[in-house]
Image 1: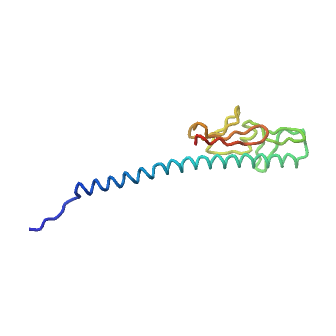
Image 2: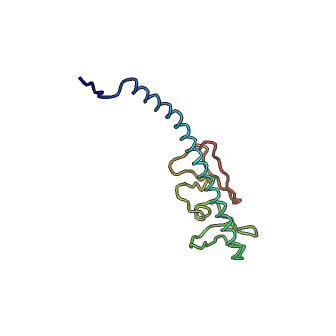
Image 3: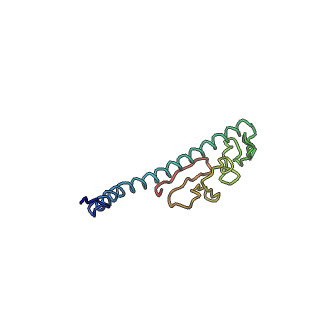
Length: 143
């Protein structure tokens, strides 16, 4: 009489579960690290976009040659509110200022604080701050 096996033994099932548990214990911390690094990289990219927008807007302001102007019209027709004067042309911390110059999706901008945050929800200590001097600083300790 031939005896055919009809499934897995308990030892085989336990072995597979142990292997899966070990893989999960190694993979989950790596995934969390990658997520944090991706958020920080996104913020650094946004900070670079803010700095580029400031440089381009200020260059356009200088080319206009009117140091009393308080707005610059970019090539795509967007009007950006800027500071005036000899060293002017820096987008203001306002929706009509830096937000209009950058026009980023995926982030929310608070014109009262100059903070750019992820639009999926506030993540503590994970944002970019734009100040009126035209600089952007990244806070990524909580990403």
